Length: 160
Image (tube, rainbow, N blue to C red):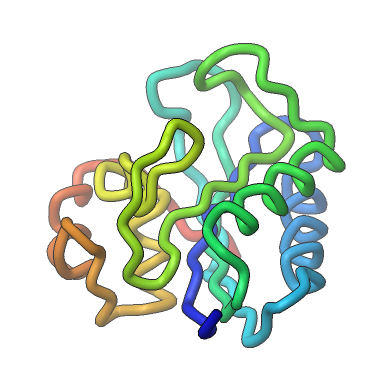
């Protein structure tokens, strides 16, 4: 398989979130068939459709020869290693890794939808994505620059 650029959302709002997210990014850097890893700045945001502490979020990108399904399996393995539990939808979490984009792939299966189906609705995804790839075109959604405008009313703050 030819290498494609993958974007992964990282988030957490339970435990030592900065340490967990840094470790998870390190785990991403160790995935087989990947190279050229980069990470956006960290951002804080309120939970969406849920309660609980604020989230710390970022987006990582890298080149990979892994299939979308293989990337998803690796992300779920990393989440489990960091204590991720799936008790209910939008529950607070120690780690959340979302496959946002896999090259220009578009797919919708029972286990995986790429691009992520709510990517364009969330400032905590769109803003970090735009910092990594300001000219990115999201399949089926358009330019990341335009998506930034649609989430401009959401409260999000970059963390130093």
